[in-house]
Length: 500
Image 1 (cartoon, helix red, strand yellow):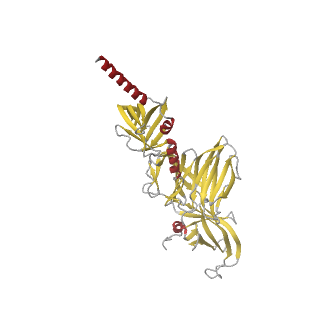
Image 2: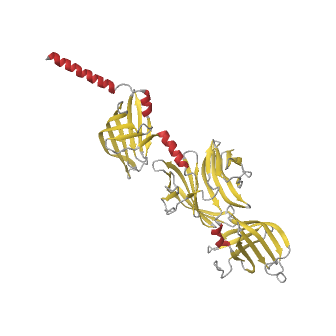
Image 3: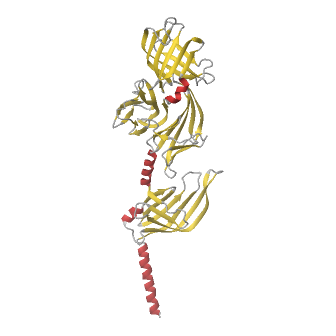
C-alpha cells in the first residue's frame, strides 16, 4: 500500500510539474510582438506588455476627461493559451472612479476583485477583442494605438477646409500639431459681422472636433471704405464641438449660446473656396483647389513689411493655388491671399501667424471675407438714391444682366454733369468699386432725357462704401479717385419704396 501511494504521489507531482512548466514556459517572441502594444477604440484602452516571458495587462474605460467617470483594470496573471491563441487573464481588479465636484478630483467609489478576461484576435485580423468577465468591455474591436492615431488623423482631415450655410462660413485650419483653428464668420449686414474663434482637437471616440481652450465671439463693425471701425469682444469663455453627419454636412454645436442650432454647413460653398493650411518645416503653406486655368488668386508679397515672414512663392501647381511663407524673424504677422474677379476682390483670407525660434509655430487669429450673393445684395443697393440735402443731385443703380451694377449720377449743382460707371462689390473694402467711370457734360435745357453731352473724363476710379446711419439705414459714401477732395453721401429719397 505504501509503495502504491508513493507511486501515485510521484505521478501527481510529475503531472503538476509538467502543467507548471507549460504555464511558465517562455512565450515565443513573435507572439509577444503580436500582442504587446496599446490597443484603443471608443473610450477603451488596453495596454499589453511582457516581462521575463510573461504577459501583463491593464485597461481603462472612459473618455479621458477629468470630470468623467472612469473604470480601470489590472490583471495580476496573464498566460498565453496556444490552443485558443488567446491571453487568459486572471486575478483581476477593477476600480471605478467618479469625479468629486467639491474636491475637484476623481475619487475611488468601488472596486471589484477576482475578475478574469480573455484577449484574442478577431478572425485573424490585426484587431483585438478584450472580453472581461463582467461584460463591460463587450466585443469592441481594438486597434493598435499608432493605427488608431493614423485613422483619427485621416478622419480629422475631413474637417479641414471651408464650409458654408447661408451668410455664415466656417474655416477650419490644420495647425500641424494635431490641433485645429476654427473660425466662423456670420455676415449680419454689409456693415457688420460676427466672428467666433475656437482652438480644437479631434476626438476619435466621439468622431468630432471639440474645443480644448475657451473660444471667443466678436462683433465687427466696418467703417466707410471697408476698414474695421470697431471689434467688440462679446465673450471669451465659449465651448463648441463640430461633427460631420451622414450626409457629409458639418454640424456646429455651440455650448455657449446654441448659435448653430438648425444649421448644416456644406463643404466648398463656391468654386475655389476650399482652403487647406499647413505648417511644414517651419513654413506656412496655403493650398486652394482651383479650376483649370484659374489665376485669380493672389498672395500678399509682404513688400510693406517682411521682418517676420516673407513670401517664398505663389503659383498654381496641378490645379491647386499654393502660397508659401517662410519665417525671417520672431514676432507676429498677418498674411493674406485673395481672389480677384476683374477689378474687385470677391474673397479674401487672412491669417495671423506667430513666429518663434525661427519657425512658424501657430496661427493665433485671422479673418475671412467674401462678397455677398449679388441677388441678396441687389435689393439693398438697386434703385434711386439722393445726395444728402441736395434734391438737385441723384443716383440710380440698376443690376446688369451679367456681373455687377450700372451706376448713373446726375447733378445740376454745382456743375451740370452726368457720371456713369459699372460697379462690383469688393469684400476687402466692403464697397462697390469701379475703374471705368466717365464724366459727361450735361446741359439740362438742351439735352434730351437719357442723353448726355461730351465726355469730360474717362477711366475714373473710385468706390461707393456701404455704411449705415444712426438708425441703421444703409448709406452709400462716394469716394472719387479723380477728385479726391470730393465725396458725397447718398441716402434713399423720402418716400422711396423698395418694391417700386
